[in-house]
Image (cartoon, rainbow, N blue to C red; front, side, top):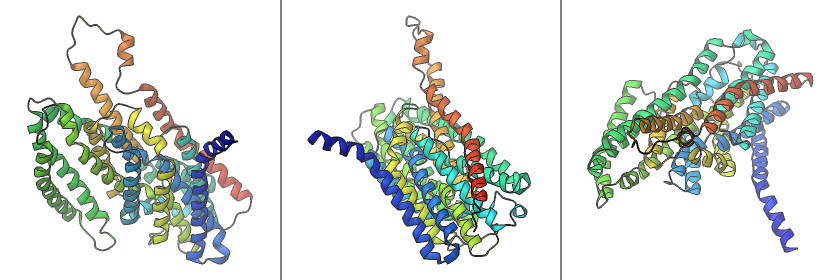
Length: 470
């Protein structure tokens, strides 16, 4: 009997997360109806809120791994500490700076002339949300870090094509988004490789590593602070006062200089008594890595909350009798569903992919992980500042690939002893980027858009056949 009880507890433990997730979805749907008080129109709104909560949970389970995975893989943070920091920062980013990208997702893909019928528009949004959430969950439990932005855009396109045909889509916007999917991982990888090359040239491979670290580590911290300060000035203050780009850049430069000045004595104190070894240099990067991971989570919350609540915001607008595709003020309760859902999904299901991103693609230490985090943060910030829903997954994973491939390139240029020839099999085994994970991730990226689009098209067709009304 004691063994039966232990086995029951072991089997039931994984189901706790599913149960809590279902409760969150139900509470989100009920709260949406109670807050809006739409009465007869509450069914569509309840479904939209429930699907948005489902999508937010899926984002927390899949996408957030890209933010904290490097810090966990470099052993700068424990799994519990990474989850706690990411949950707080994701929620703050979604609530403070997520509105503009939400508007892009909810109103920038469809052509207004293609959706004169509000019921068809609502059905398209519901189908897109549910299809994207289903596909992201399939990928998550298959161990593939796919793009939730890809999944949602694929769902929107699939439902839009069935609902209104090719003329219903805003193809210039779609072309810009598709281009960003290609450019963003290349930018993330190139920037991460460039940062790593700079750190190795200025710190790792110099004679006095500690003295060099005292000079350059504060500079890197100041650059990171400047970037995020400019971003917060542009996005975080947008609901209070309009800040022009020039002023935001000036604010970022000022805060970056201040943080640099504060970091100089702190880094010198931390470096006091350290040996002139690479291990000591890695220690100096741990705190900046944690801070960069937290700021990256903030940026991710601001950018990817749109994937969960953008369609919900559009449904709310239609249910209140507004034009389906005009500019509108996004209700706070809509943003709250996205923010809380991402955090809950991270806590319940996030560790699975955090381990994959942090440990299995390429070996990370605090220096390499910091290069990845800083690269991803700057790229995501630039995308969010433009209101463009790029894939944070592509950016972060591109940064990891960039670091890994740069290490391979650097290792191939180092002279080897002629007395120690390396067979071809051994060279393949010692590649610093695991090719199996690289090919798997690329394949998952390629299939996400058509898979989510096909599921969304089928769901839209089913809702239409069932006579689902607004």
